[in-house]
Length: 163
Image 1 (cartoon, rainbow, N blue to C red):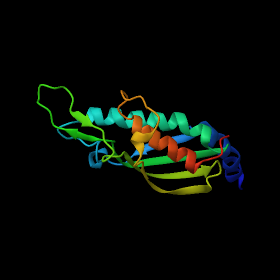
Image 2: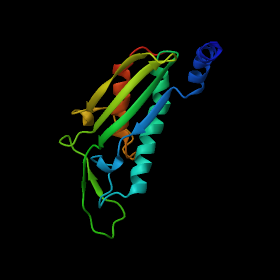
Image 3: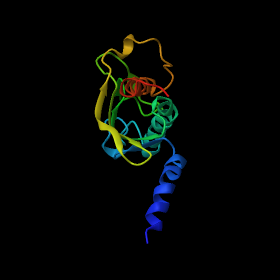
Image 4: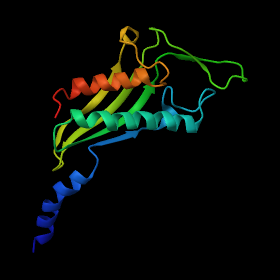
């Protein structure tokens, strides 16, 4: 009897549709250039920054994806724009100096798959923006403004046709 494979084949599209269209994960944050725990950042702060990037991709990517597809992204490293300088312990935050010499960098792996599981596109990308300060003014109060802009540019290049 083969009713189970037929049932699975019938349910697969429904199960795929029930999953969110974007799944964002992070490699080991302890190994990230700027999210790892150090004198500037603790584990909680690293998790907050990672969550902010995850929410950003989950909000922006679906509009760029072909209908019926699912995007899985694993961010493997983030080097935030600028450099963190040590400040006296009395200061509650390190000083971040943002200059052209310290561009943002995001390394990621991705896989775009159809509902039936077939892979449409996959790969690794090393995202850089050497001219990041020449852009239109971003919300400079936002800690990850340059990194989010880098991800937005990647989405536009990688998935040019909006739904």
